[in-house]
Image (cartoon, rainbow, N blue to C red; front, side, top):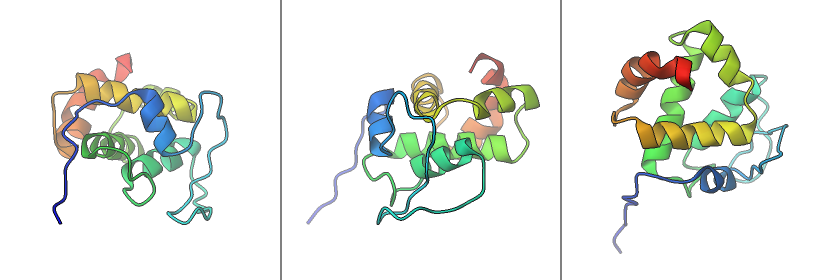
Length: 129
């Protein structure tokens, strides 16, 4: 048996949102494990959404690129790298808007590593997100 790797670099916001069961009007997001049981983190909504997007057990339909971008965005925001105004603005996005943001970053960012996305591209472009 051979494994296939998804080579598509882009996914739409709708495809990304579908992977974590989020609709356009979703306001409340509950992080769930691969069995559908809620994970109580006590964190802000954006960290739960980005954690779900970056975890292959929770969102197996996402490409590696989408998972990398979600992880880098979360890392940039929770580690204090991003400007506080941009961080607060993005933290208030709805779950669907966060999915759209991950799709946009994946489309526009030429960096391929978590460090490159987090420490270079996001720091240079945070104000326009």
